[in-house]
Length: 82
Image 1 (cartoon, rainbow, N blue to C red):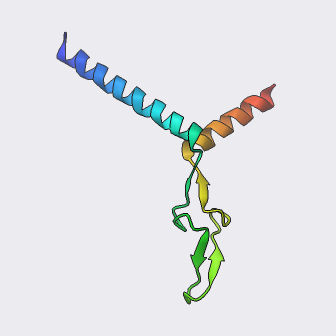
Image 2: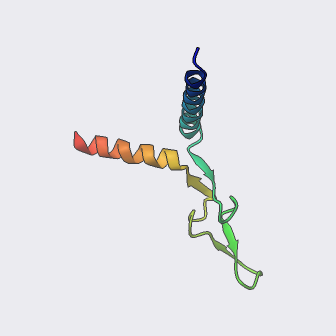
């Protein structure tokens, strides 16, 4: 077997596995914790005494994963095309 062909096969197999793993993770766990508030849903005020709701996640502490957002967008386009 050609060494370049073997390396390309391993690369393609690895990329396919990673892509399918991420797609599975987006299907099972569509949300991740918000990076701004670190999943708490609250942000400290500048004085540090009070808390405000995080504007990015609207106080839920969760954000939709990028892969799930893309899937939802394409599903909406497909649904509207019917």
